[in-house]
Image: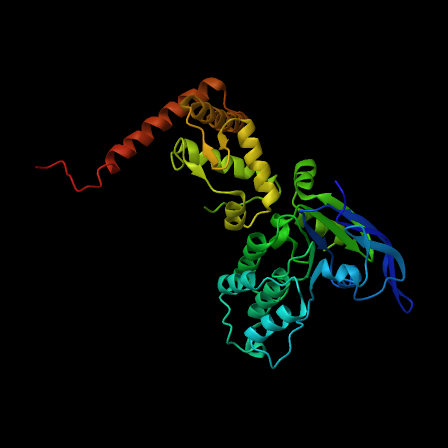
Length: 232
Length: 138
């Protein structure tokens, strides 16, 4: 199987602080991958580097065989952990903005997702609750037709009921031939939607495994493994 | 459909058991169509590849069959369904007998206890068994 994403020896330093330290992994097509780590483990930085928004200090990354950069931006959709929409926008404007900005934006899918998410096109973005805002950001990110989706903490700020809705939407609306990397520290809530998980601790990948293997080989949940590795 | 999952055990096995239970209990009838991978994945909020694997295993065991272009269906072979029933009963019995042995009961005692328990249960059923308002008088 050809890798959709290849990350090879990626390191990142901010001043003296080593945020990522020799991160390497491959991701095949059609996979849901959990990028798991506690706060400050380097998850967001890694996502930003893959998205081509921040340069790595060392190492290289390729998507569909092409090195990250301007070319790969059309292959990757990135949902940041902070909203990218402007406060003056209504939901409708945010959708139109994305539609203008990205040639691969699928308007029909966006409408279908808004409906599913119970988002009103006429609502102002600034008055949306945190949970509704996350639903909007997810709609924007998943409505692009790309090969790789990067979702940074998509259920970070929402209550358990709303989490279910977001998980439901991810499984329902993701494209089967694409892959998703989803970062989270809420392992127990999300582990059942993943094919594989990667544990990122102090800037290193300390575990990369199929989730059903973890359950089968070790007879335990990913959440248990996570708590052990991260010593909670 | 909702399942209480145990994240410590392989999810595909839990979904397989769930579907088998629905078949033996008659909730899913022989020849019934089962949901698509995507539908079930979204309903259960489970990884679609896990659902795919579940269905493949069920096909391998000939519990469900794929009709090209139409979808997946519960087997219409009664013997297969009977076999699943026996298999599931076997697991229950195995667990029960082991549990009783751990409590220190001899095989002969276990048989007696089961007989008595079954008699007591069916007695209860008879007493509670007429919710349609019929009474002994009249």
